[in-house]
Amino acid sequence: MTAEQLPPMVELQHLLISAESLEEFFSGLSGVAAATLSERTRSAIDCGITFQEGTRRVTVAGSSPRAVRLDEIEQRIGHGPCVEALRTLAPVLLGDVSSDHRWPSYQQELESQNCRSVLGMPLQIGKDCSAALNFFASSQVFDDQTIKETTAFAGAASQAIRLVLKIKAAQDTAGELRSALESQTPVSIACGILMAQNRCSQKEAMTILRNASKVRNQTLQDLAKEIVTHLSGETPATFFQS
Image 1 (cartoon, rainbow, N blue to C red):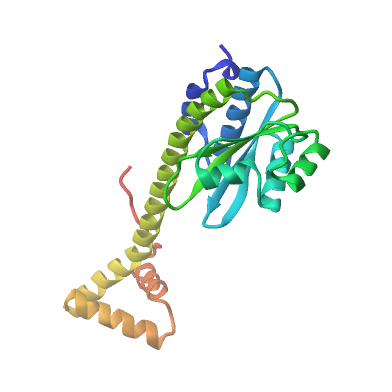
Image 2 (image 1 turned 90 degrees about the horizontal axis):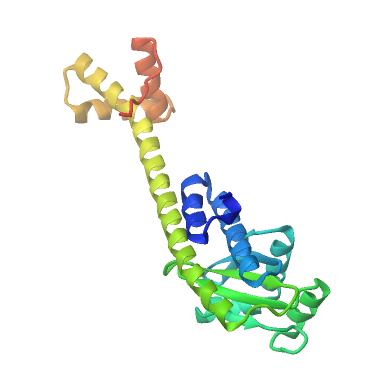
């Protein structure tokens, strides 16, 4: 069985494991979503992914350049199935641009791009942001059963997005903590040196270090690095348990 033949849920799991960035994950997700609906409808389907924070909406990925272009048209105009799906948190179908006249200016641009039907599918992300899958077809292929199955796929996709965002947040927090520890290490070592040299408390050593940094117009970290390097001949380093 090839990667293209894997069930959608397995594809989502693979994305979670293999994607090395949010951009790569969302690009992969748009591809899996497009392939899933293309197989279901036996028609070529493009998929764009829109994120919304507050009133700001942005296209974050697309299964093809055409998908990105069509998704960005809707975000630029400010209305359409995807925008409505984000507002109502329910699937929104534009069945036929030639007979459904809810969004005339948007539909005119769709016709010029040979896009006849659009399905906006909301994704449940969290209270601070929302997202939607935007599916584009050149014919009328989004029937009730397709919408039902796509809603189930969107539920799984929502869980995957929530998980990958949590992982990203945890990585960011760990990175910030690591940077803080690396920044504090020279200060802690220099403070210990001053405590030994002056037979003083940690608080008194920190006061000496701060006063010296002001007099020399250096940051506390730079002065601490200079003290440690001068004494040991090596640049201070933070050691993390692996």
